[in-house]
Image 1 (spheres, rainbow, N blue to C red):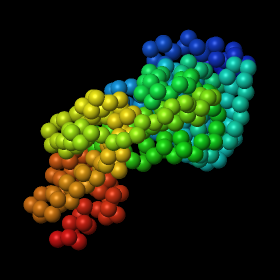
Image 2 (image 1 turned 180 degrees about the horizontal axis):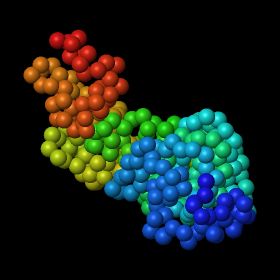
Image 3 (image 1 turned 45 degrees about the vertical axis):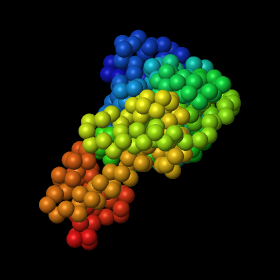
Length: 316
């Protein structure tokens, strides 16, 4: 697609098309969400940004025949639509591939491409700041470059499944969703360092769980009914560990990631509250931090296989 009053970029050479568009958008607008909205002429189905940097967006858009400008963050995409052939041009390089589930697309920060995608696209995108990738490399003592390779319809089932899970797990609960998104971003960054820098990482992961006192403080924070910060950064800071090492050690100690531990704890709270017939389902949802009764019911059903109403009726 082309902007009103502009020529079709596919009628020019890739270099000319990219150069012609380079100055059309102010540099401040070249964050991934803005650039994707401009090119795709639509808003994402869902966009969740993290205050610590980065975001995850789910897009469902039509065919694309346009230049995507250089962006400030790395963009990693997991395809989730119908199988189709596509083409991507970057400078003098022309890459073609087949979009299908299980492939990923990586646009390194600062890269510009001319895309030719003939059919509608369903895709989940991770916007990953360079600083996040550098942080993960430092936290894991990974001696590997942090420059990502460009990938076009590249087979990577692990990265694809991790990223697509973001569209399924968000539950309308701020604490749970934030914790999940932060864990997922760090996990994806670790995967990208291992599989998409052109060099295998060289590090030895530390073993062992959290010290009992540290684990107790982490669980107290997760259990807090006050407005305690249960972000991954706050939990890690309390423990004196990096986010990466805190997550690994917490799972070693409890068998669950921080997000799954909190999810299970909230389920137990929900069940205890539902046993009280004086408490409405709307009150239970609000007490547990869900944005709506509908969001709570969907999350409860995902974990138990039945709605809160059905559960209460069956255990009445």
